[in-house]
Length: 421
Image 1 (tube, rainbow, N blue to C red):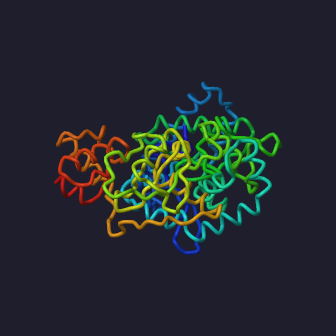
Image 2: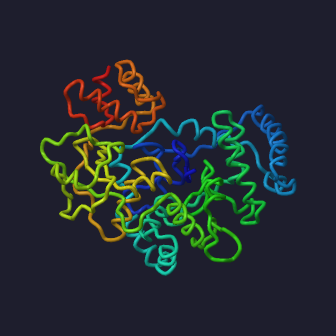
Image 3: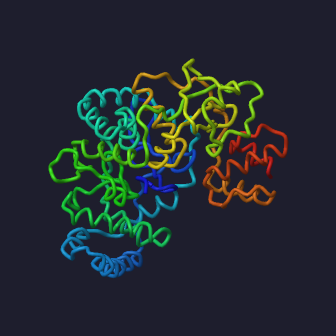
């Protein structure tokens, strides 16, 4: 979704959150490495918002028609559409509550989701094999994305996409982004691929079995069934799954290459070289004593990195270029590891062997911003005070940790924040 299916920090949670029980629902992390916990709530919009929204729709109609949207398509799409204050409320509050990566993976790769994935793969074996043959993306990877995005098609979202995108385009926070998505949604309707009534999905505008945003749909959606429509919304998942494979193929998926592997790091390992930015051939790591956690041979690739999503006390992974392809779909490390690990488990692979620092709590969005401010004040530039923990912030944390003589693993934790304070 992000143009990926949901882009960067718009990697939004859709549907009910997965539990570690038999419940198997969609699960989509917000940013590295957390998971937005979106609470369903209907908020009554003030009358001023509704009247202002109607005026905005009238002005937007002019812009849409100027971009080639037919008047009958626009009017049919907006019939019954109103300002939805609950969507703005979710957008405002999505960033504040996060889970640690192990909590996310407990749900993303729960026993129920693995079993349901194997069942979905079995039911759709011929379809997924045909998709793999055409696009060169392993069927287990496509199934894993399907599992995380909509629980294998069972939680596709029931929100009107036009109403959701119009509300978010009217709201000033990211109006330009959502207006572009809204125009794309109208183009989809104008093409005849679906109808306004059937164009449903998440409150943030993602649609169908694998949760495409409209702009990404226009660029990558496939008519795999050959019926003349690219239907990612219906009960038949063929077009949606093919579209996901096409998306990954477009961004450089290499068939046969793992996304990553769990590894064990040797005693005395230099943690300052753990980062997506530090790329070395597999043999470089092997010469340092890095080994597979499950006794497997490390595949020989030229550009690999060591990733520590929970610092040196958690699991370590060697990641390959396919890791970065999945990042195009969703930039959150938790999501990429979730997709990769779920695909491995569906295939019959082992669970993550290492433990996690489960007593650590996640930092809130405001605490992450505070950490970035304090890093910058001490001369370690995180390249922005945005509450998003990406490679720049991790590098800044590593540099700070090294300066005070602690393990420079880049782990953004309460311990580091207290030290900065």
